[in-house]
Each structure stands twice: as structure tokens, then as C-alpha cells.
Image (cartoon, rainbow, N blue to C red; front, side):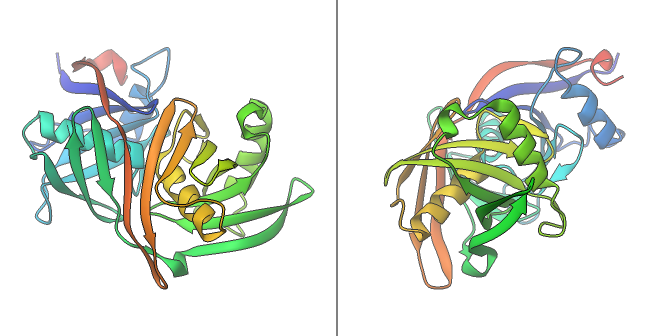
Length: 278
């Protein structure tokens, strides 16, 4: 019987199946189909995403991230913290590391059960503020940032008690507004508590649902909020499953020293068995 060693991890409630693929144990699989099966809740292990550590000639390791729908993503902030701790636990990296992703080289540092990830510089040219568009026959103001992956930020005063079905409906509408976002987008709904604390809920592209937390969404929302004069670094992003802390320095052409800090928990380890992917 073919068995694949794995760990189940979560970062602020965003959960992942993580596998060491440095020896190519996943190379014979059609990964999109495999990921869809093993990430299915109730009938398999279930997760928001699937990740693999692979060899890299540019960094300590390569992070490959897949959404639960089987699509390969550029990167994932909460996933980056989890895969960093995973790499440290399996001996693929030390306490401080660099890892390769589709969207660039990232750095991270192990802080006990927490991990602090440094993002590449965010270009001001990848940020668009104060836009308006008619979504669902209702004109809404939105902001956009590319922080490894695309994010739309919409401010609302009712984020903490926003109806789930309203969030899904509006999030899906914006996500699939392809004339604005040809590759789709994640959608973050944000409420400002004060200049150090924001409440956030996210509709995630690829998961096609609300997730308990989104690291890149929290990062994008903190940066956008600071550019709009609503927040100052470091910002505490209050997700549905805990608090993520975002650090950054605003510059003229770039946002530099961008860090995402939060937990990275190992909740189980074992083997993925054939019935999980059939």
C-alpha cells in the first residue's frame, strides 16, 4: 500500500496538508486531482490548501502551494509560516531560512510556535487606491494590492457581524469580475477599530469560500489602510481565528521591511492513504 507521510498544520485557523517532496514522492501524481481529493472535507483529510517542500538551487527549499480546488497558487502567507516551521522540523532549514516561491524569494524566522515571514518589497505600482465599480448593481469603493497574490480591499463597518452568505455572494462577485481582475482576486472585508487594530474577513480565490484567516490578505489590508491614513505599523489584524501582526515601512516607490507574524501549529502527523485520493 502506498503511503505518503504528512503533517496537518494551521496558521491562525488556515489549515494545510504539508508533505516533504524533496525525494520526489509526489512526482507520479496528477497534482490537481490529488489535491482536490485530499483537501475535501468529510470524505478525506480536508484542508484549505496543500503544500510541498521541494529542493531549490536559489534558497533553502522551494515552497509549492495548491489551493483546495487543485489550482497552484503563487504563495500563501499563513502557508508560508506553516511550511517554514515544517521545513525546520524535518531538517530542511535552520531557525532562519530563505525559500523560493512562484512570486519570489521569502525569508522567515522561527519564534517558538510562531513564525515571522519577510515578504519581498511591495511595489507602489502594484497598488491602486480609491476605485469605484458597480458590483451586484451597487457601486462600491475598493482598493487593490498585489502582495505576491492579488487582493481587493473593501471597508465595511459591519465586518464582525457581516452575514456569511452576503460575504460569499459579494466576495464571489468581485473575485470573478474578470474585466477588472483577469486572473481573479481574493477579497478582504475590513473594519477599522483604531490605527493599530483592524478586523478582517476574507473570501479566498481557489478555496472559493471564506477562510478563518488570510496572511497575504491581512498584509495587503494593513498596507492599504496605512496608505489611506487609517493605520500605522505594526498593525494587529483580527481574523476569525486569532491575531496576525503586520510590520512594514512605507516608501515612495516601495513598501519595504514587510513582515507577517503569527502562529504555525502542527496538529497531526501520519500517512495519507490511497482512499484519501481515490
